[in-house]
Length: 283
Image (tube, rainbow, N blue to C red; front, side):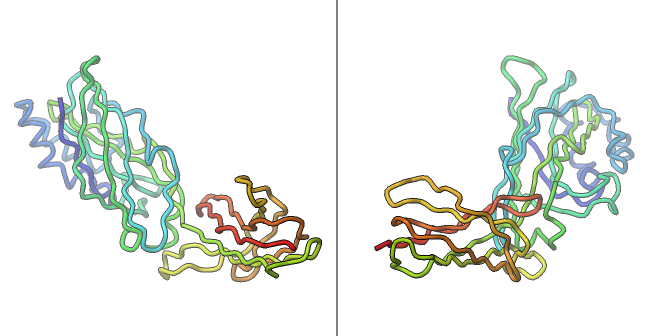
């Protein structure tokens, strides 16, 4: 059996209250019950107090991977979860939120939009167990208002059983939303005599959601790596720290023909990046 799932914006506790009448009405229509509407409307102001019997579990956002966004990135992010109820599941609502308290508008600092209408599918082997999928269409240019959006986001799930009773869980799963980073590299001289010194410069930048530009990312550890011509594997030669404006500079001895690149590992707010290798011919 397929049922409708409402995926929406989370903006304070109104995430469910905004849907209270239409969503509960659909649940009541399915079950023939009307007395759940008033009680649900009262509960949505404090989502944690909802007492329906739907249990949410197995939440996963973006396949468990970081959500890395540039200044204008548009990305479709899927959240999967299981809804279980011995009284049936009429429909559910999913949202991503960032902050400290989902029951307080003041405690929520992040908002994400979705226009999709995903579905839940009841298990053919186990009655009352539904596999669900919500889809969030994220547009970095409009949804990420400032740099504070980088960090941990939580998956909020709510739903109605067939008697229009509401259930919510504001932290079924977490996901990291991170700023995209970029690296450049330039190895000189080209060509170079064997045994001579090669200077490898570059720059590390990352998305700035306040200014909608990429800005230099200083004081970060970056690896200088080398891949011998004919090989598919890079090895790390040394680790350096990005300077003012994200500037990178390192030296190494030329031994054989190959490719030089810089590589930056992810951190709590910024995604990983790797420069395209710069080839140097050793004479």
